Image (cartoon, rainbow, N blue to C red; front, side):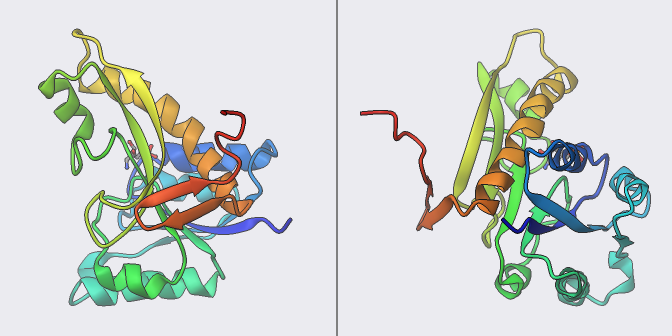
Length: 209
Ligand code: GRF
């Protein structure tokens, strides 16, 4: 099977990128990260990519007259590297409908809450402040809204009364690093089907009567 060719977009630490690269190295994920793109020159994700010889681009949004030309340049890079799937891994910008329509390939995102609860920024802090007993992470297709696309997979973690944003963030990250490579592998195997808002994972639940 041909590995799924990925473009990873990241603004920061890049721990999800790292988890994806490790899953590839360990043979759990049949994919290849063709290129990493960031809107932040100092993003650790760029360094992680370069260490592994993966082309890494900083695209400075301030050099563009608007969002669309910025996104058009990102799409040019993605297409130049013949990617088949865009993986958002802590990319701190909302992509416009222009990007979503022009991409012509699946766009995945991971969000650190159980969507549709706590979309947007500081999802972990929102969960702690609200006092929920469970939170987690969600991998979803990106649509034209903010954190609104069809949900592919979620993982749940408990939230304790003594948690703060940091402790909950750490607990959720462990699950992020587990499920993001898993979803990409399912996509690479052609096992993910979209039916409107519903996502069907082929083979899932077959053991259940
Ligand atoms: C993660 O919490 C992810 O859910 C959110 O941004 C963060 C990225 O972390 N979208 P990292 O850069 O992958 O370490």
